[in-house]
Amino acid sequence: MSITPLMPVYPRCGVRPVRGEHCHLIDENGTRYLDFASGIAVNLLGHSHEGLIRAIQDQAATLMHVSNLYGSPQGEALAQSLVDVTFGDTVFFTNSGAEAVECAIKTARAYHQNAEGGDASRFEIITFHNAFHGRTMATISASNQAKMHHGFAPLLDGFKYAPFDDLEAAKALIGPHTAGFLVEPIQGEGGIRPASDEFMKGLRALADEHDLMLVLDEVQCGVARTGTFYAYEQYGIEPDILATAKGIGGGFPLGACIATEKAARGMTFGTHGSTYGGNPLAMAAGMAVMKAVANPEFLAAVREKGERLRTRLEQFIGNYPDLFELVRGKGLMLGLKMKFESRPFYVHLRDNHQLLTVAAGDNTIRILPPLVIGDAEIEEFFDKLSAGAASFAIPEAA
Image 1 (cartoon, rainbow, N blue to C red):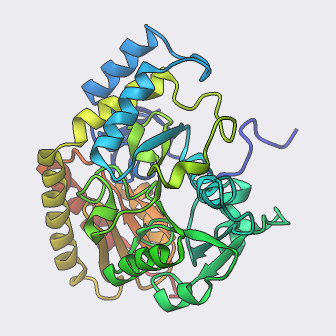
Image 2 (cartoon, rainbow, N blue to C red):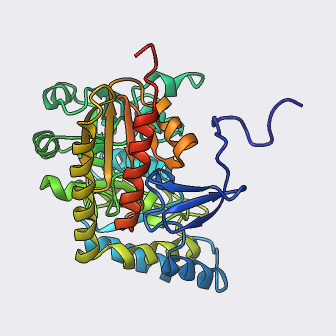
């Protein structure tokens, strides 16, 4: 047998973590890595947060899973916490970001098709180039990226693609079958590319004008990552529907679809479900995260650390004009755009300087540290980044 026991869909590297301590990962051989990837924006409280660990342990000893046919005190509490700090009125819990986006797509279509006086012909969702919404059939269909489509044809119908941050192009795609927009306020996989204020406000205005659903994918940029609880707050708008995951569980699998009462009018009994979604163990993790991050003091600290990190990065790249082009992002969701394909540098930092980052599109290195980093971790990051830049050999093709 030549296939590996773990299906070979990931090009797994030689780093094999077995333990985490605050902002570091430790592998089988005891090598310590500074983790500025956070499981791709998941471990926002680091790897050993006492409150999160205690909440999971206590809940595991009490009740881990029951059917969603029963009442859920734990789910009701976390849903209310999310409603209290967001635009939303109601929440559906999932196990992942892709599931949250799936629910958001269904909610947008059901708003038109499953409500009294609705229009069953309105099913198209306008999405944007270089987006990443997940790996299910619906979510890869919502992306225009051919590399995600290969081997999975035919795609699902009902998606149209416009250039990101191009309001006129999005407007031109609106037609009689349009149900809504689906957009990341900050593209993560696409290269840490924030949308402009004009674009986000314009989509909100178009949605209002044409009775469309504005659906935000904040799976990566949400839950305090950008210095506000959700990134939409920084654009002065509110969506109708929002998909969230990653950081909301702090490392435990958890996602959610948040919607207004109006947007959720089509999501009635029997229209959607999940066996594991909203299980008590996940709800305990989510509540622990909310207690830690959903407060003005924590969010202000994220903004302060993000600005400090960004300022130093902008100063740093001036020392290496042949390597780096610019810094972009918000809060502690930052991107270091390089002048060539970023993956070799990401590998170099990992394998030679024990610094974990994440490669992304548009020649970008993603810098996604735990939100609990302190001065010591910031200094260690720059020491490793400086050593990595000084020892990196620019590829000849560049």
